[in-house]
Image (tube, rainbow, N blue to C red; front, side, top):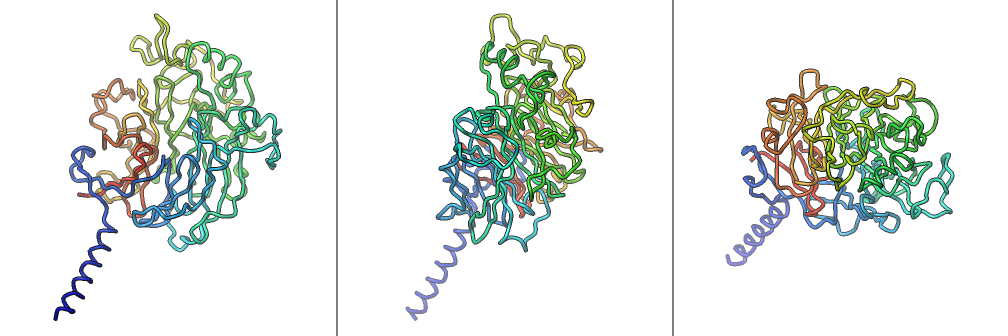
Length: 470
């Protein structure tokens, strides 16, 4: 009898152990979520600066760490060894690093479970290279790499036996300048027609009046893709690029012409973007964009979209270099100052349109102060009820907020009410009705998992959270 009792005790203990290993850790919802019908769960902690993620299956996540490791989180546990470690070839200074991931048939598409074991995985990162590297595309090495021999690269890998293998170089940008130090963007996603889209920042950081003046007149912002008519020709910076997932070539009819790399541009005039996603209802592409000290944006990105940078940010024209500076000189104001009236772009200077092929439009939403807007995710799930189905979620880095936006009937505009009908957030109080989650520290990625729940990446905490019904 005693042996039987011991045996039963062991069985119960084993089952309890298995249950606890599978159990997500519940977190005090009052502190984080506005909707009390939802709760926050900790998926995993202990990651080192996680930046973005993609799903292989339920409870099976591939996570990028900024310094160069690709981790696998399986059943809420970090695997003992990385899926890939390219720390030796990744430059992670400032905004550089291992930045973007997309999985074929696993990101923004209907999940195909049968392809779990053999998948194509795309990575975008700032790569340390040597002069002996072969670029395999029209580029003179000395022009590509004047700054510490780094370049931003897109690779295709095969996921095989739990590892990423057989890397294939698809793209390196910029091709004709040293614009790879900062403002890299680096978010990637795959459309339903197997085209990969990449956010590519303008490569520039100017911090004071003189450096901003130089950058616009002679430096990196003196470029056609930053709306300088006689500036540097397109180099792959300052826009959204698109190319075929298999061969790294744009097999569509180019929007702006056949000259490389202009033929890779889907949109331009973008300062720096950390978020793109497709509306699952319409197929329209949307992005987020970071302004200097004002004018963070949410944009509907139609083919040929010109976001206006560096002649306009948010709703405001750039009429003084001081608007771009961290420190203002006496008497100077930034674009979001209440005394600056909204102006039509034609009132101060024309934008580059590449022979009428580019089209400027104001953002669908903008903040008049920096929030560090990052991820954008269309929630194609009914896991939280029809109230949230196909809504837009947008995250911020500075204060760890997630905003919830409804769209209008045509889904080309956000459905905004009250003081937000002008599409401008003037202060935190105006945003109270659209806050979905708060106090999540910095956020760099939002993804809808195969289970239909929203997952959140926080690099400063080294964590992934998910939001579930309570």
